[in-house]
Length: 184
Image (tube, rainbow, N blue to C red; front, side, top):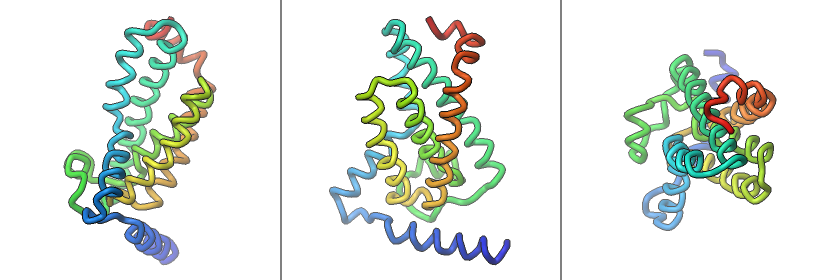
């Protein structure tokens, strides 16, 4: 490993460890634990599916696009994680994540948050965009405070998500044509 990269990773480790929460900080621990889970792809898909089934036109199409983008994003992150193979920070919390996905770079949750932020502003409505704007950075940071990621995992993941979101918005007419069965 290059000495400069090693130095950057050491700083990343120190900063990430410094903002990590401990269970004795009960209120903050519980709040961050909740926030860390709100970025799970299956939660989003579980909410989007009934919206897609039960709504008409705008929300039907939004749900279809968001759901498809989440699946795409998860596959891309999975491919990067198993290529790069950066180990998660040591810790106890988040056993389900640690056992199903031992790699931390880039953060799938932060990637999803960045992507959803771009899509929320691109698709609207404003209340949804504002809600995602508050949620996305808080949820992403909670992944570090709970000890599942390093700050660089979150930063790179968020930027990667912004790029994916922009790509999905730009390809939206093509996506809606190719996957017309999911849209009105």
